[in-house]
Amino acid sequence: MKSVKRRDGDMKRQMGKKTAYKKRSRERPEDSASASEFYSSGLGDSHRKNAIRNIQRKITARALGLLAVEPPARLLDGACGFGFSGELAKEVGFDVSGFDIDGAIVEQAKKIGINAVVGDLVRIPFADSSFDCAISI
Image 1 (cartoon, one colour):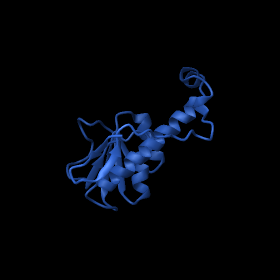
Image 2: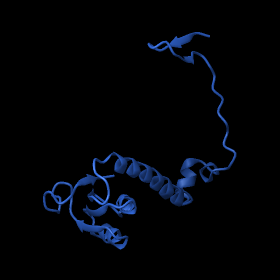
Image 3: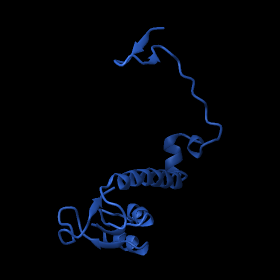
């Protein structure tokens, strides 16, 4: 096998080396049928929702960690949707407001405690300098 050296001389990997992957030991619901059958049957609805929420939770947590401010800073959640990212920001102590173009969705965000209003990214419905930071996830 041919070895590849990094510039600093460390041996990092060997060309042609095979990697063995462990097979999952538990059955996943999406493996019970073809993808098209699984999602068209409605079985995928909760799976899809949970998968998206898990991804959004990770992205939001990472974004909050990268902000140059810390709670209880005033945070604007642009295009907040149902308020999921804003809810996570509230959990860690941010003072959260948000906006979305859909009034029905704004009402849902209000139900979980987000100071949400109708607006869009072209005309943000808050005064300049109202917030310390912003996210849009």
